[in-house]
Image: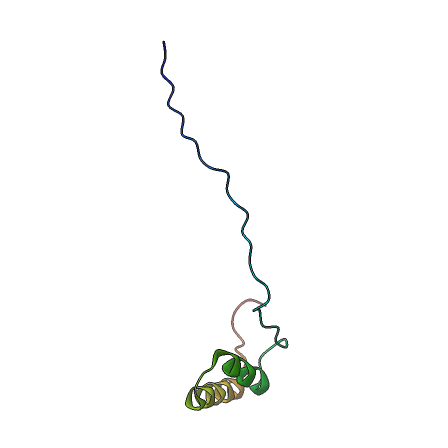
Length: 69
């Protein structure tokens, strides 16, 4: 008589995610979006200012001409 070794795996339970806590922000990036995200995350003022300063530096940089068209 042949022995069979079966492993029983419980059926996976469906993933239920709470969508109540999701943030809906405007498309793109701007000073307002940065300030809103910083406020939602509860970041200190110095972090928000650092992010805004970094964004302003990013905005001054020219768009690269190399890469995929």
